[in-house]
Length: 276
Ligand SMILES: [Ca+2]
Ligand SMILES: [Ca+2]
Image (tube, protein in one colour):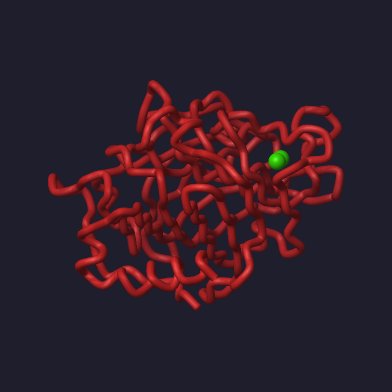
């Protein structure tokens, strides 16, 4: 089983960065190499220096951050920790839950590049960003406005080309019983093997054996290129929250540097599982 920390290479914000190299932020005391857009900023919290996509108050805040150099996206693995705080005030959604709206991890090739930022509210700072693929962590059920076909007040979803409407039946979503905005730390793993995008979440650092959500997709074809900007976007609406990324690793493949530094073992496990 892969543990949370499998990467030993640190290569952040240097001229040495190449499309196949590793991105690793153990914290965000430095945001070198990242574009910070909208309300996104590094803030010092009880968790240390974190990347806050937007503040929890007032309404309709949004922010995004993307690595400034395109990353090879034919095959990649990314993992991050996050914490969503809600102030416990404001309206409730159809399930009686406060706090909105959530965030996405996105791979995108938009004209704005690393400075891309979509619409606020239920659009998660992602709507309008294309071409792209994203995994959403959605904490507000949008149903009454018939916009998004959200399956629940707390769900994962895999989105394409900046469209946040899941469509009838809400395909490629997965409701999660424990709320992402329970103020606890969450762990997420997103893996693309060239054919299927897989998402895992947990409140522990142990990577789950089974994926919570998968979607077959050809990411390079969607982007129209082999590389893309990787990062996060998040937003609040009339409901409030602050989405915070605590740490983040991206391992594009092939990564000769990562292999040399010992990533080979982790990748071998993944390949063995894929072949089995
Ligand atoms: Ca929503
Ligand atoms: Ca949704």
